[in-house]
Image (cartoon, rainbow, N blue to C red; front, side, top):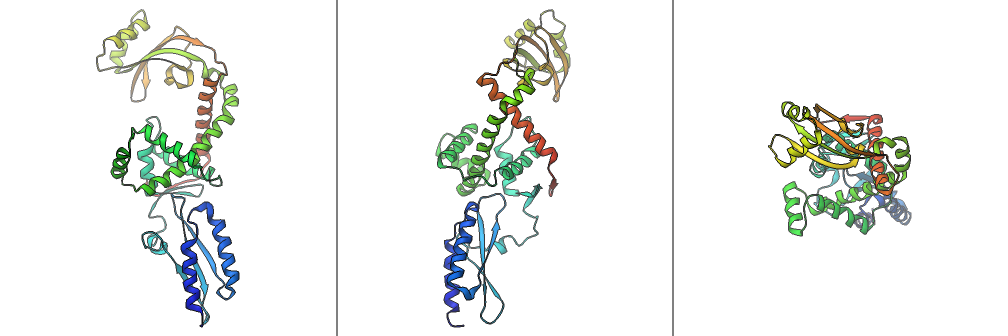
Length: 331
């Protein structure tokens, strides 16, 4: 056994020096292969554990013993808890779901709940999309510092986190460490890059297939109780009625006047012709009454193509969700 303690000590130092990012696993394997060539009696084998929900990995090194058998070496450079112990609970205990084999941890799911929050989507869709986008970007290059900063700026602006103190307070409220935020930021930057590329590539074809959805429409509408909207609907001039509702808010109605592409209007107004009113009709958990003042046929200008790109991406993700194999563990 002469020299074996030195081999184990060298194995520990080898493990402690390996890059921890999943993109660098090939580099780690190359490093271990070179070490094994220099220590042929060890017959060392690298074991890689990919942590769910983060870009980090953990390693073990299996080293042959001179008297037979194998010794497993684990070196932790963070909290001191080897991954074999840290993950010793049931294999699915820390996971919420799996989508086409991409698993989602409880911690990542909780962060996603806080990070998204679009009111027209369901939490289930958000979690599934996180898995799908992770799969789509798995082999992409690591984000640049510029991309990470852009993702962080966008994330903070959406939540009104304009100072370091605001950011630290939010992390404390959510229960995340700065390192966990950086891990999430890595994923946001990669998926943001993928989304931008997909929107640009798909915009024109989607526009040509759904041209009417991108007509420029000037409309006004109110959402509220059916009886209150019925009072507006019976008036001779629906636009005057909606204008009066804006001028004299009652608290019962939520009134909006906007110029948008048709696809971004409330569903009951998207196909309505110029000068026509609709409603009251059921809308979400209430009712809607609205009217279209002007409708201009769509043109593929830059602003319209940007909207078409967003719609194309939404359609792409809906199709991916419909085709994915989804297994919920907790919900």
